[in-house]
Length: 152
Image (cartoon, rainbow, N blue to C red; front, side, top):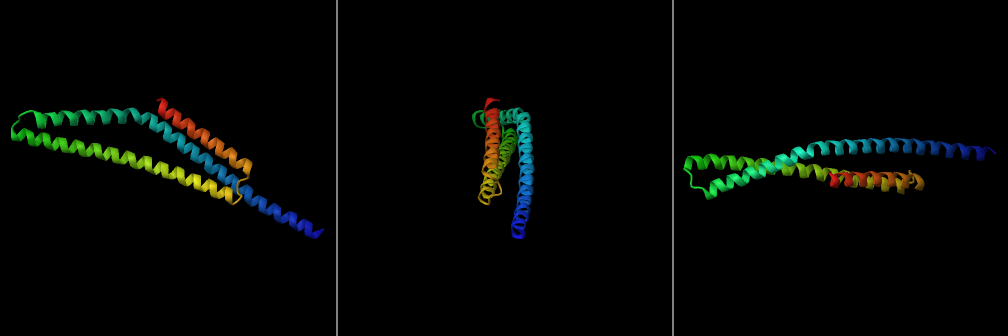
């Protein structure tokens, strides 16, 4: 009888640890989803400004290209327009580079999140039912984000 109670007590202690891990994991997933919602909201707000900025740089670079190569100008004006041309090309490339770094880091974070979920599933921290519930909610949220990005 004593051994049976000891086994029950030990399994209860193990379950408490798993329950605590599941609780912490649930909190992490909720925090992650809140971060993704904030990213989606700020992306929605900044998208139009970045589009206007990108189109403005593109039009200005096109206009300066026509001025430099198609119009006969004095060398003084040509140097000034050339410096403005180089500055705007540099600013546009910095804008594109930084936006691509943000996208790359977001994709890397999503991959590490998937690896973490698979690892926790392999370690039996997540039960099958809870894992698929989290995974279904996670993919439902991601599909919602993707559809919002393409619809806007």
